[in-house]
Image (cartoon, rainbow, N blue to C red):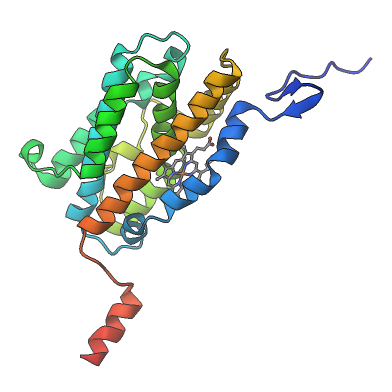
Length: 242
Ligand code: HEM
């Protein structure tokens, strides 16, 4: 007899195989992920068109957002979500140290919070403290994002600004996560073994889209806060004309 079929991450309902929840999330967020990625602020940052103070703007928004999620995680008592909340992922201390490096010892009274970030913080405070699915939704977008594209972004920022010894980029470094990729696999396995019914899974998916909306709104507002920049080729053409 051949080996028994391994119960995999997909399930069968009415005879039709259904992709695993982590895969359904990935497919459902494909477009919104792309929209976030294309935000002009990120493009300018990674294209080397912003200075370190303008980069600090993003760090400050992350400090507020991750601080709110970590505060909600500390009081949320849903046992189903607890295994996702590894202390090795906590970002607020790393972000505080990045802000101190970028803005100096007075950073706590100097960092700027965008209106979209205030709205996002208020939303996290309102929904993530008492609801496991809501907390997981925002946790997934922010922490899996940091472990995924964040790893690429962190390397590009080091290259653009020439920061050394992880100064200013501690947020992108997870010293207590030996392999971000293995951790992401484990996180997706946890998602795929959630005991939630269809309605709760759908609520998770819906709230993940809300989390993307808030994150993208923050990036779009940062694009309006930094002076409009032109690609180097466009600005040199402009210089030649004047
Ligand atoms: C220039 C910016 C970005 C780049 C280059 C980028 C790149 C990537 C890449 C390559 C992956 C797949 C990694 C893998 O499967 O191992 C990924 C996944 C992910 N990204 Fe991004 N990303 C960017 C911005 C963002 C932003 C702004 C967010 C959140 C607001 C985000 C959230 C996520 C999430 C949640 C995943 C995990 C998807 C999953 O596997 O379930 N990314 N990103």
